[in-house]
Image (tube, rainbow, N blue to C red; front, side, top):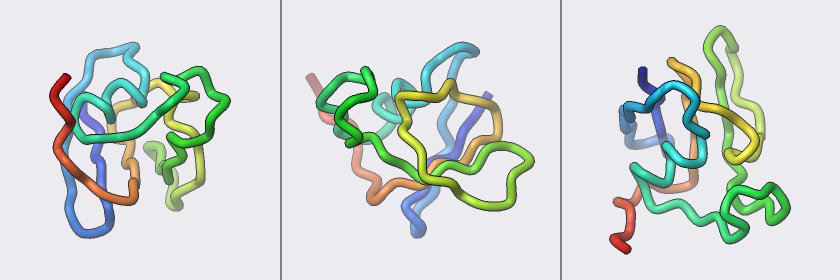
Amino acid sequence: MKITITDGQKNLECEFNEGESLLTVIRRNIHFNSPCSGRGFCGVCRIELKKPGQDNFKPELACFHKALNGMVVKVRSIYPPQNS
């Protein structure tokens, strides 16, 4: 299963396992800040999300969604993840 992460210029196809959170998939593939670690109260993981079958992007928090095959996630910029 795959999602696409885009910044409007670059597209990155990312594989994931069923049941994974969208935030986990994004953070595994690009540097993406989430100070509250996905608890939903900082609002920093704001993305534009287009789910399969939708025509338009909608503002969402990545931590509130499970990854679904065919999702397109628009972020401000795509940088490689930082090594821990």
